[in-house]
Length: 124
Image (cartoon, rainbow, N blue to C red; front, side, top):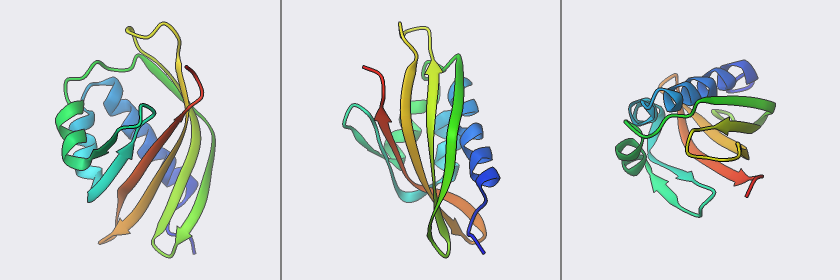
């Protein structure tokens, strides 16, 4: 049996994007991420859980987003990765931000926890 289902991980990703649209991402990801989790961003930054939580609440929100081409990749008995294409827009960007995303989740004490989130830009 898989550690996660595609629908379960998609629901978590949609909740994360919703929090980014509402400028509450720091609170959301602070609860979801493992203590040693990292975000690897398109600009080359690697941010820790503490850096993410400090930077996202109150940040300029995304106006819209779309997740497509999602697939589940089993990583282990209690882990899986979700890989997908995301396109999003925000008032400060002249073009939509489009990237490939991968999120690695572990089940800890029965709850999903995000360990690694990585972006690969498809737009300049």
